[in-house]
Image 1 (cartoon, rainbow, N blue to C red):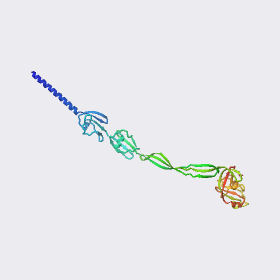
Image 2 (tube, rainbow, N blue to C red):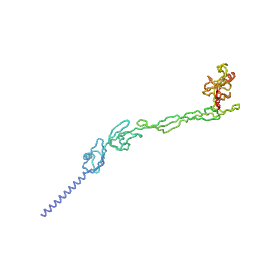
Image 3 (cartoon, rainbow, N blue to C red):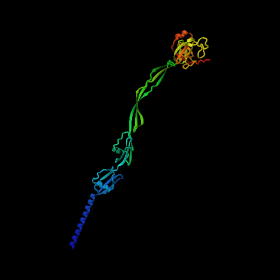
Image 4 (tube, helix red, strand yellow):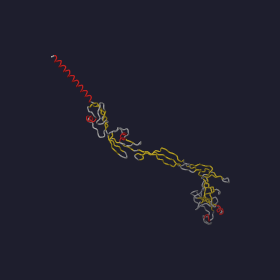
Length: 344
């Protein structure tokens, strides 16, 4: 009986040992087959334990589906290991709009710059991209691109000259002479012109260069208003003129009137013709103006004539011989600073 009990006890111990070994073996096999992995998807990261051996099987197990343009960073038949991290990049629909084209595409890019590079859309240095290149891609993103170009345009501009007037006490008032002829200058103006989608939107002057300096016009004008004659007489005058001078008398050739005519010897102002009376164009010298005529003396503008128009003067002489000898001359005439003669 004792021998039987000892044998039965040994059998129990052996069975227990076998059971323990089986449990340990099963636990080891279980541990060897189970993998703890991480899956990163659009919703974030999640850690799972799985007995699946490859990527395709674990995605099916987790009911994770990939759209045609989605990407995962491992091959579908890649073997899983404990600690494996699977990253899924979901594709976003993107539209690119320019003035040249509009196109749709799906991308896994994380920002606008990467998406455009992936789609082989060229971006110029000055182009305007909305949203900005560092903006994260979201679903149904629209990217607008404005093509920007700039050019520098050079134009030649004329520079006006300044007209300078110099007063001179060595010249009579009313006289003038050109000292220096004015000449226009030239300037090159550089302008930066900006175009957006081919349309000009701004222009800015960025530089100027003088190609030719302008030369000022210089005119000398008389300031002297005092006349001292060769006889020592002194007159103050308002201005001086150089006039075309002729002479006339009371002959029919000069006045077209004969003695006996009621207007014979009567001037246009109503006074009698006599030495010192001169005929002028009233538009140039008003009647009643006192004058000093070079080589003739003091005179009064009191007559007119059909041929005396503009810058002309006709001097009265009593002698037809003197008229004939006078001919036609250029004389300086001074408009004296005296009150006008009042005709009755």
